[in-house]
Amino acid sequence: MEEKKIDIQSIIGFLLIGGILLWMLYNNSTEKAQLQEQQESEQVKIEEAENTPTPEAEASYADRDSTALAAAQQRLGAFGYSTTLESASENTTTVSNDVLEITVENKGGYISEARLKNFKTFDSIPVYLIKDGNASFNLNFSTTDGRSLNTENLYFEPELSQSGENHVLSMKLKVSENEFLEYRYVLRPNEYMMGFSIRSQGLNDVFDSNQSINMDWKLKGYRHSKSISYENRYTTLNYGYGGDEDDDLGQGELDEDEEEDIAWIAYKQHFFSSILLTDTPFERAQFRSENLVEDEEVDTVYTKAFATSVPLELQGGELTYNMDWYYGPTDYKILDDYDRNLDEIVPLGWGIFGWINKYIFIPFFAFLSSFLPSYGIAIIVMTIVVRIVLSPVTYKSYLSQAKMRILRPEINEINEKHKDNPMKKQQETMKLYSKAGASPMSGCLPALMQIPVFYALFQFFPSAFQLRQKSFLWADDLSSYDVIANLPFTIPFYGDHVSLFPILASIAIFIYMMMTTGQNMQASQQPGMPNMKFIMYLSPLLMLFFFNNYASGLSLYYFVSNLITIGIMLVIKHVIVDDEKVHAKIQANKQKPKKQNRFTKKMQEMMEQAEEQQKRGKK
Image (cartoon, rainbow, N blue to C red; front, side):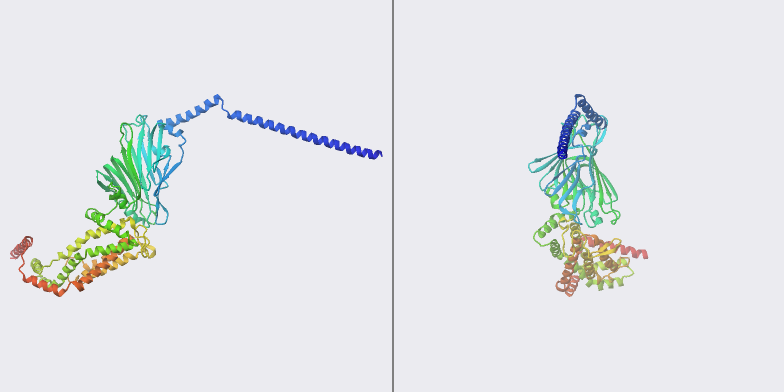
């Protein structure tokens, strides 16, 4: 019985001890939690106390900011203020419309990217005129405290706003909140031409008026076309000056020039251009163009490097220049619509050649391409029309050749009869021409009359922006060469590919030359004169090499033109001109008394006198 009681007591004691231990554990954990909360609360108070600046600490921070500003001002003078603003960072601002997108850097305030939205390069990459550091814009100026500063190293503060439908980006290089140098960009809807101005406010005591402010604009032209050498041929630095005059730098390795009264500066690439225009002409400017393409296989990124240096004039100690910036196609119609003489950068030819292109071929081609299904067909139709218009000239030329061919036997007789007397031979030959109503020059004059048309078209097709990336038959781009075969090697002056349109044009011109000169070239060959047969074979060969890298649209024109000319010549020869009738007419002309004009009479008298003196000399 006792044992049972002890067991019960033991159990009760064990339970009591267990309960006490549990209570102690719970109480201990509660105290620890309270202690931890108290410690955390105290830690928070300590941190808050540390983060709450005392008056002494606030003074320390102010001293630190003023020290940084003082250091910046020691380096940059008044412009040290710009380094204390939030904009003093490598940030950018992007502005765009339907056709153009530009990105402007805080550092320097200049355009670091310019992308044309609606165009691709030959390898389907977006067309960038500016990207990855290929361009820079900088003002170098001196300050009244003796510093020489460059805006490309200073930070501008951007402010983007809307003015009607225009996007306005103001970039301010600040001396204080109300004193600054500003670049102002105004992007209009659906426009490649962007407003741009440079002005200063409150800097008349900062700029050193005894030193000029120099504006430097540089750009390396990106390659956009299949043939970089062909694109480079049409890449130049152009500028307008003296009211309505314009000029360009050459194609040399390095070209420099200086001009006064500058209205605009154009870094013209083949089909895209960057143009800076000013409302107040620059008093003078220095230009520099450097060719960057020595080897087309190696130099494949840039075409030319352009640079312009312009001194800017202060007005009342401040800068004020209202300008425009154009980033867009080298398209004659777009540039001409601005009515600022920018169409002159499109190489349409000088004098009468440019006139023919501006007032005849450009409007006519635009009319044809507006309703015909392809630009290739428009080229063919325009070629047909041109050849029909020139067919009377072709007729005159062939008729003259027919007369000379009919007179050939009589000319040979004169040559044989007077072979020992060149003067007499020439005199008798002229008499024969005069009586028959024929002249060797009458065949040359019609050909000379066609030269302005041919040269104008030679300038027109490579410059026609409408042909860019327009395909026809096997040619995928009428503004570049067509390819039917790629060669595993490069032939000097020919290239690493075979173009079909130049081959067809060369064959057609060879056939034409055979028809016009081949039959009589040996008979008419004069001693000491060039071998006409050699020239006949050489000309198509030169054309084959020369046009292999030219625009396929131009080769298409020459091919079709020569085909049509051959057809016209066949019609004239077999339908219109009858050799027997021409011969009869010549004989009739011989019987008529021929009244000589003063020039012919004088020439004949001079020849007779020379012949008489020659006879006296022999005696």
